[in-house]
Each structure stands twice: as C-alpha cells, then as structure tokens.
Amino acid sequence: MSAAPAADDDGVTPTLAALVALRASAQGRRSARKGRHGAAGPAPSPLRGRGREYAESREYAVGDDARHVDWRLTARSGRPHTKLFQAERERLTLIVADTAPSLYFGTRVRFKSVQAARAGAVAAWSGVRDGDRLAALRGSLYETPVPPASGARGALRVLDALVRWYGSPPPDDAGLAVALDQAQRLLRPGSRLLVLADPASIATLPPVRWTALAAHHDVHLLLLTDPLEADPPRAALPFQVGGPSGPKRVTLELGDAGQRQRWLQRFAAPVADALAALPARGVHVQALSTISPSDSWLSGFDGRRR
Image 1 (tube, rainbow, N blue to C red):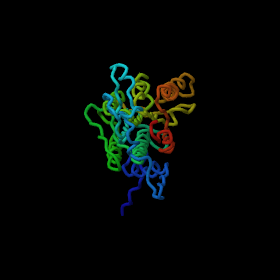
Image 2 (cartoon, rainbow, N blue to C red):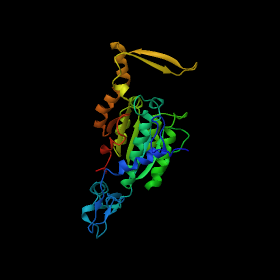
Image 3 (cartoon, rainbow, N blue to C red):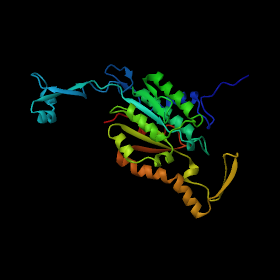
Image 4 (tube, one colour):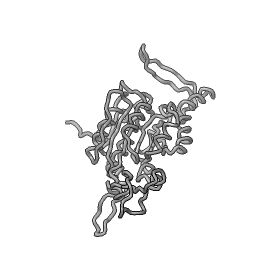
C-alpha cells in the first residue's frame, strides 16, 4: 500500500505540492475587508484607482479641468496643454530566479535552492491575493519567461517553473545579469520585482544596475543563506567536492584565523555589503536563511507601491 504524498519536500528538491500548500501562509497575512453592507472581499482591488495613471497630453480645450494642465509642456510649446489619465490596471509581479550552482547546497533543514523556490511561491500567492499579474524568468538564452497571467492560473505556471529550475542546476544558466536584462524588457513602470539570489551572484553586479531598476519599479532582493556560511565551526571542516576525476575529500582548517577570515569574506561579506549598500539605491533587501520559515520575509514585500 502506497502512502499519500505529503505537501512537503525532502529539503533537497522542491515539490509542486509543497509550493501549493504555501498559499495559506501567504494569503492569510492580510484579512479581507468588509464592505458597506457587511460583504467580505479581498483588498485591494486589481483596479488601483480610476483616472490616476498618466496617458498623454494634448492641447487644452474649453471644458477641460484646469487642475490637469500640463504646465511643463505649456511652457515649452507656448500653448496650453492638459494631461489625460486612464484607469490604473493590474500590477505586474515579476519573480527573477537566480540559478547559480552555489544555491544547490544546504546544511540544515533544506537547500538554499529549495528555500528560493518556497519564497518564490509565497511571493506568487501574495501576488494572487493582491490581484497582480504574475510572471517569472531565469537567466537563460534559450528558455522564454513565464508569461504574465493573473489568478491561480498565473501562480501555478510560476510554481511549476520554480520546481523545474530549483530541482537541479540548469545546464544553460547564463547568470543573474542576463536575467535582469530580460526583466528590464518585461517590466513596466510601477511593476513589483522580486529577485531570488545567492549573495555571491549579487557581488558580481555593479550597483548602478539596481539604481536603474528601482527608479521605476518596486524592487525586492531576497538573499538565500545557510547557517554554515555565516558561522562556520572553529575546527576542521571536511568536504567532498566533485571534479573531472570524481569526488575528492577536502578539509578546511577553520580554526586557523586566516582561513576563517577568507571563509567569511567569501560567504558572509556579500550579504553584509548588500544589506548595507542597496537600500540607499531604492532596493528592499532581506536575507532568508534555510532554517527560517519561508514566509518570514513577506511583511517587507506586502502592499502597494506609493
């Protein structure tokens, strides 16, 4: 007799059932609002305010609202112009998945790659709750992004991609820089962007990349970490690593001050540097350990861009 599949994963590879089960934790963080007649419904609405998104300017006509005069264009042209607005539609939430080989590693609870998939699922279900369209992509020269779609249908497309991408290292990973290039072509002003990344991948990117993204979008960066990276033991640490001639055992003497300092510079410093520098460039940065609840970072992601 076979046992029923559990809505969980083994910590090494993510499962679709586990990512679907995260819907409750993501969507239960904001209670529904009651309307004037007591009917409950999710908030906010996918239509985020009538007539508040700028569309274009045209020459002023009798009867136009004087409050909408485009003073800059009026000054440049010498003729009065007025601004036209349209209803602000669904926001796009785009999830960018770093698939660097260093993510497929973990010492406690789960791999960083599995935690990345789970965090992406939490973000997707949060987007469903907020009425967003959802899309996802990774750094690949051959695979097309998951196209934007709303509702559970859009979320399940994203979750399916996360299971594939974080099940094992994709052989055609082109790097996070390529993924961000693709993201810039897909994003529209006011979009919400979540980047799931290994800290080492962030260290290779020039800070100006983040400034350009945050100028027009709500940018969130989630750094996947493992406890061993931030606090290695002060003793010999044996490793088994792969190579052209097969597995090889390596021992790091982390009781040695110089060796320990090099370890921290390699693993802990990129996290500290990103947390210190990127908020000033308009990026919401958080670190998520493999031992933390997969939705523990969500409070900094919730809500609408002001």
